[in-house]
Structures are given as structure tokens and as C-alpha cells.
Length: 61
Image (cartoon, rainbow, N blue to C red):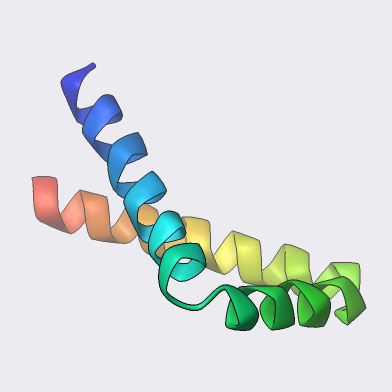
């Protein structure tokens, strides 16, 4: 359970850095995402999940 809390905290830190350091870029990214086809977003999300699982698997070996 501690690992889950750490992982959620790290996600919040990484997400928060974008909005704290470059809010204008964050808005541009959101606009670009809203114009991107759903199938492309779904593929990118699936690839991100797979990469995350692979990273955790390697790190926790």
C-alpha cells in the first residue's frame, strides 16, 4: 500500500510541475489533445500503460 501512495504522489508531482512551470504549454497540449482523434489517444494511452508496467516490472524485478 505504501508503494501505491508513493506512485500517486509522484504522478501528482509530475502533473503539477507542468501547470506550475508552464501553464500556457499545458493549455496548448490540452487543445491539441482535444483535436486528436479518439483512436490515437486510446493507442497512446495503451502504449503509456504498457511502458509503465514494463518500467515497474524491470525496477521491481
